[in-house]
Amino acid sequence: MPTALITGVTGQDGAYLSRFLLEKSYEVVGVMRRSASSDIIGERLRWLGVIDRVRLVEGNLTDLGSVVRIVQTHQPDEVYHLAAQSFVATSWQQPSLTGLVTGLGAVTMLEAVRIGRPQARFYQASSSEMFGKVQAVPQSETTPFYPRSPYAAAKLYAHWMTVNYRESFGMHASSGILFNHESPLRGIEFVTRRITDGVARIKLGLTDHLTLGNVEAKRDWGHAADYVEAMWLMLQQDQPDDYVIATGRTMRVADFADMAFKAAGLTMADHVRTDQALMRPAEVELLLGDPAKAERKLGWKARVKLEDLAAEMVAADLARLSR
Ligand code: GDP
Image 1 (cartoon, helix red, strand yellow):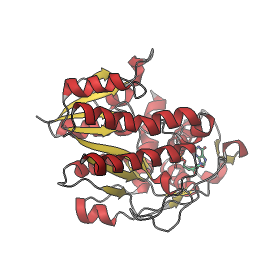
Image 2: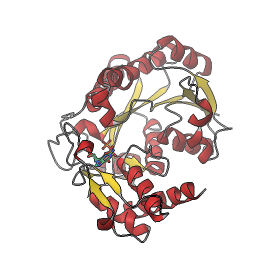
Image 3: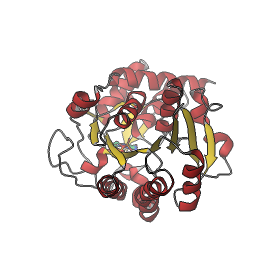
Image 4: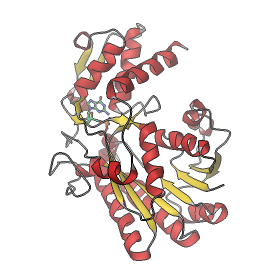
């Protein structure tokens, strides 16, 4: 039975990846930060019904020794490094923490693997935010990066360090440049979930409006459950490499909102307000990925359509709020 180690196991992707790997009969070890709220932090793993089958161990990306010990003890065959300060807007408020956790944290994991289990295959969760002020449309593996936030700059450092460890030490380290991927388990601060939660509240009569920032921003949104499969596929290749993972379709925030309101039988124009306070100091206006390489080399393709994703998220938020 192969062993997979997942950092960020309590997040959206950690939960879906855990379920995916358990279905493939992996032993899954998940790294968790110590917290006074550890009972509720496992909520996503619980939602997917896998919390009892994931072996949760305590460690912290800002403490090299803690993760070295985990790697040495569990001797993983595959390491999925998903943990990060992952919210772009927060990265302007906490830029140093974002650099420490999102940037240097990846190096800590790479070091832990290099020290404790150098033959393990390593996955780095890179991000389409690295394209930022895009230098080409659509964005592929060869498009130059132009990060527009402390988050994106930290992810870019982590990305290049992953490439560097691959080239310097011959590690099987791959980097997945994932475009936005959503699900009912998306954090409430991200725009899709903010929208579907708002739609559900309006539908249930708990409020009559939803406040958003820049609704003209365009994103290439897919379903997280599809995207974790791409992570796994990268680590099954003979050679490590970097891949863009995307749907190849871009939509405005307003378009997603329209889909979500429609899924609940509501009209967006009746309920959406915009607030300058939700605008960002620098915006990423347009992301559109070119997933051709992933399709060609991994045989991967996004399955879920955005309209269906929006409907699934609205239904889940209605169910949550009705309970
Ligand atoms: P990101 O692409 O990783 O930053 O994912 P988000 O879901 O946080 O944001 C996607 C886009 O939605 C960005 O261009 C935001 O500026 C825009 N947006 C508009 N209104 C909101 C809002 O109320 N919350 C968030 N998080 N983003 C918003």
